[in-house]
Amino acid sequence: MLGQGCKAVILSLSVVFVTLGSMAFAPAASANDGLWRITEERWSDAHEKAWEDFIAGLGAADCWTLDECLKSPANPYRHTDPRTRFYADCADMPYVLRAYFAWKNGLPFAWQSAMRAHDGPGTDIRYSLEGNDIVARDSVPRTARGVAAVPILHGIVNYVSTAMFRRDATIDDPVMFTDTYSPRLDRAAIRPGTIAYDVNGHASLVWRVETSGRILIFSSHPDHSLSRTFLGREFLRTGPQLGSIFQKFRPIEVAGATRAANGALVGGRIVPVMNADLEDFSLEQYAGNPPVNPYAWGTAQWVWNGESMDFYTYLRARMSLGDLEYHPVAEMRGMMQSICFDLRARRHAVEISIGRGIQNTEPPHRLPSNIYGTHGVWELYSTPSRDARLKTAFKEMYDQTVDFIKMDMVDAPRLVYDGDDLAGDLLAAYREQNELCRIEYKNSAGRTVTLTIDDIVNRLYDLSFDPYQCIERRWGAAGEELATCNDGALKTRWYEAQRYLRNQIDRTYDVEMGYSIEELERGPWGPRTGRGVEAGPEVDVRGYLKGLVARQQAAAPDIANPVATP
Image (cartoon, rainbow, N blue to C red; front, side, top):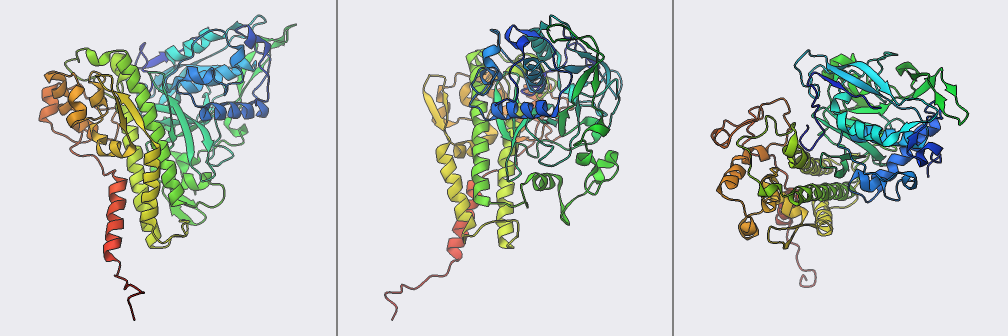
């Protein structure tokens, strides 16, 4: 399974089989008795709009697990649910929510039920270099009585993995069609309910696109916790054969069915809407603008209104309402708020691990073969992938802040700022949000420890991802704060040996990492060694801004006292 990302496929590494027995619409009658009766022939534009509203509501809700969200007022269908618990990790969540919505609205639902690595036998289909081929499909049976919906949702959780998203975006097969398709890069296409797939083994759902062009996403994790953040550079752009980054569920319809007396569709076959008939289908995210061969994606260029950009700036420009503008002080507040959300989600994940008592058990003699993609206790309760994304968010905030200062120096037209002390104003916004964000944890003695974003910055590379270590180390404690930790000499040695792994923000899913303490300690270290790197990138935004402000004040000329001057 994918460490704090998405589950692995236990049945096979080469082929996975999945065989499962404000809304514009009121719940279908079948939703009230737990049965899934398909009464609608197709996913219409109105259904797709209702799907978007459904996901937008869940994304905005104050809930931290899928079960909480579906039982919250954000879900208009909650009163029709049988007594059950909803759960999913990141790969499952888009499928589970799409299936749930289809059930509640009497819609057809189908899925890729067998995937095979295009690379050949013996390949882990979650990380295949050439993507996966679809070799079988399945769908919800269409019967007059209907079928039990909850077992289908639970079946999705048990078998779906990120391998489902890792297939060629150019495929347009009417029989072995893909569940999703590649959309245009604009506000009309990238809507709530759009999937954001990271080829390093993570999937999220878009739930809002801000007027500034920032894309808000939420995702589930193996411990069933939810996190919310902005889509950033941690979502790697690759070629079409791997399916990154954006995917949308393909509309389907039932053809050749008969309608029973109760209105249910019986029999028939599932027919997809083909790429050519999808208004927003596009290979733009691979081919670039102006477009090149999508398989030559590495040579793609990104030009908007005559300006050359990197992909992520181009995406932001395309998603902005109007011209791309940066309001740096507002951006600082937004980045800080996003990081605060990430930290609260991490707190929830660590609390689950501590609540299970994993820190009180003996660690294995070796790390998993890959700490980012594994199974069992490590997958459920470790946080290396989550922590890597958190570190990337801090680095992006630092890099963006440096860019804002540079843009201000040259009076860049995209920077909207009317003040005369950008460094000071950014520092003030940072401090404001830092005071508003409090992360609390109970230490091993049961006492509450309160941390701020500033505290996290100072210990970012000390946060332990290892579930076998005490909660103080999970939060990077030192000195007096660490005194309540009950870890013995062995776990302390593991913590020190993992330091270089904590320094690495790039996730390497294809590198062997099953090392012992001794092997970690003696190195060598480097991005592709599986042992980590000697130092993490600079992330101290406050320190950078304080230094700028101090230099500006030192350089300012002394002004004579106007009262004392004759």
